[in-house]
Amino acid sequence: HDLRASHEGVPITAGGWADVNADGEWQVHLNRVNANQLRPDDQLRAALTTGWRQTLSRLGQQGRVSLVDSEVDFRGRGA
Image (cartoon, rainbow, N blue to C red; front, side, top):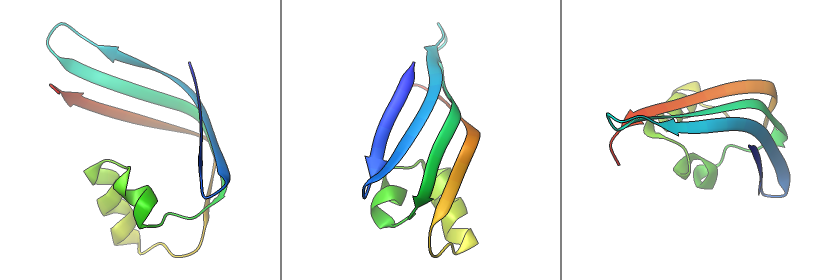
């Protein structure tokens, strides 16, 4: 599947898949993640998982970031 989104006019694209098994464990895998000059502001951080929000906060990122052909996995259990 393909994902196309934008944040403040910056296109974000990715491919990937999602799966839920019989035990309720789920996984979302994104590959080929691309975004050029993305600003990780509070609005973008609010859309991320807690772990990603905490990581960006610890890095103290200011300015813009770019993702080029990256991969991201999200996993969990239940709702």
